[in-house]
Length: 296
Image (cartoon, rainbow, N blue to C red; front, top):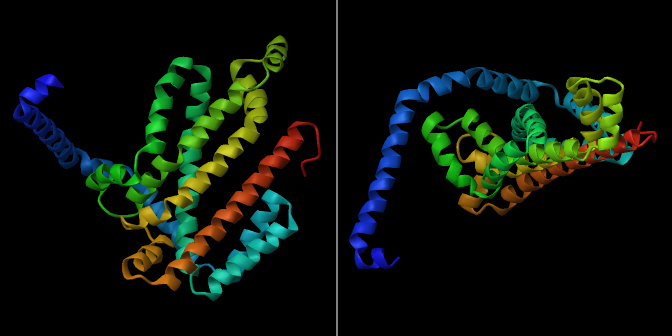
């Protein structure tokens, strides 16, 4: 500090040079590899476009029946099923159906991507304390850094559109499922693992038939938190071209349309409550089943 106080211009020049070097290096990387990275995500983009069209073009009564059936399969609760039906009917009546289906599409895809990446990473972390020590600070940064900050490199690399929005959502939403998968597997009773070893189980058999089944309540708690955090990113993702309920909310903020913002905000809340209740109830049923109760 004393050195920089004596030579303030030197400190400012050095910092400016570092910033310029970082900006130049990232621009060069973006120019050289941007198209290749974009091409890598093309299959995911095609799937997202197809899935969104499927949800938006399907007859709304059919979609409501499907959502009600999924709610029943997950929660086995009549009040939750009725709440799901009423919520989606209200969304349709107030003209928010298309935006809601676009939001459901990106949240569903983001959740499956997070599950596909997060559960294997959580399993690897549970096997290695060293890997856990490396990955945990990264997860901390992903959860605490302002979302606008990591939008900058994503947009510079991939531009505006669905894929950059999906990546931003996944960065924000994947940490809970990684953490809770790791925690759930580590919490499995060692005596149970020793009994499995005594019966000659391999590591793969212990993982698939003992550890993951016993860790499922924790894993589903992670899925629940991932869905909630993905929904929280809906409005932010709308700023980089992702269709959905975030777009009218952003328009309402820009133009001070209270009714528009309130209605679409409540639609996001309704989705959050439905997903939360269904996944929580399913997790509780799993817990009861693992404890020897009747989960179904």
